[in-house]
Image 1 (tube, one colour):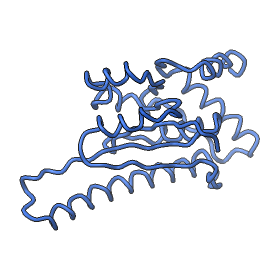
Image 2 (image 1 turned 120 degrees about the vertical axis):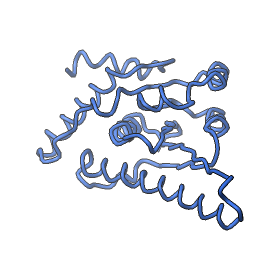
Image 3 (image 1 turned 180 degrees about the horizontal axis):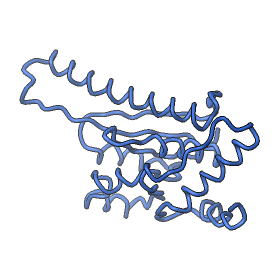
Image 4 (image 1 turned 60 degrees about the vertical axis):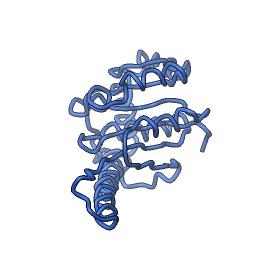
Length: 199
């Protein structure tokens, strides 16, 4: 596994299955590890004891872990024919509070190659708030904003292996070409240009 890092910020309120599958495929193609990042909030006004707080935090974390499990299961069944994908190293960051501080820590990672997020996470959360734009201006991360998950095409997992791989690669490139790209690295720009040959 290479030293490159892909950051996958997400919100469990949205369907992230296709964007997660795309991120895993990208990690395999460019030999990168994946950092998944999300946060949760707890209403303190209803918590009278430390025990109540811990129980509330555990409940929120369980929701997130269940969501991650669903994402991995979807990738396994739809895009990986239930084979191992231990070649990809994942680091899950799950913290309380806003996304700003947590994202800042990852932006400081010199090996961060690209941030991949879906359309909903980009438009409806604080990933591109005024504060975050200041950080983005300082660290200049590369971003790939995927189209809405509902518009992505699934792969027929019943196809023979060689046809399955070909269809999966084509679907990957279709999603890539429909994505918005900010500060795209040269190697990914070249990757996108190969669409003219593949499709």
